[in-house]
Length: 182
Image (cartoon, rainbow, N blue to C red; front, side):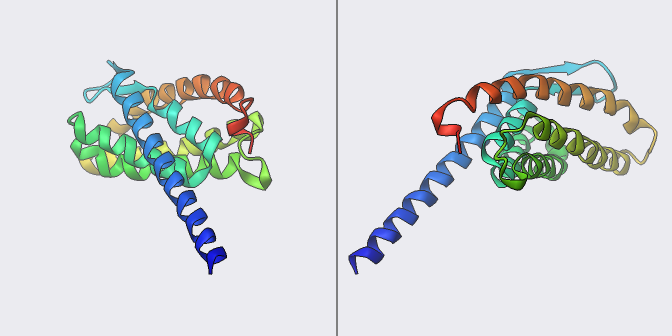
């Protein structure tokens, strides 16, 4: 009887820790998007380069696809709601959820656990066209124009490049800490 209770308690602690960690990742993505952003003068609706993308990549490299998908989708979706980009929130949830999942899935494939810089970079490279496609399709539908969304692509590319330039060295350093050596 006590063994079953001990296992239940351990499982409960693990679930609680996972929930707290996921919540913290959501908050980090939100704050990095909110406080560290630059509006680009590219198009009428602009473009936003922010460090939320770097936090999404960091979450994917350190914690895998599920936590990264949730952190990216919810963190950046909340930013859209908070910052007045409300119309974009559902699309951001899809685009960034998919992006986080793809990066994490590739970075954590075959037991790598985000330790391979090459596979981390590959995950980002494969995820970027997916993110671009979701935003392009959504913008095309919203504006009823398939040419105008092309103007958003450079800003989205810059955002992803900045994200990877920040995320890779941060994760290389963090992977040296015992907590992240999984």
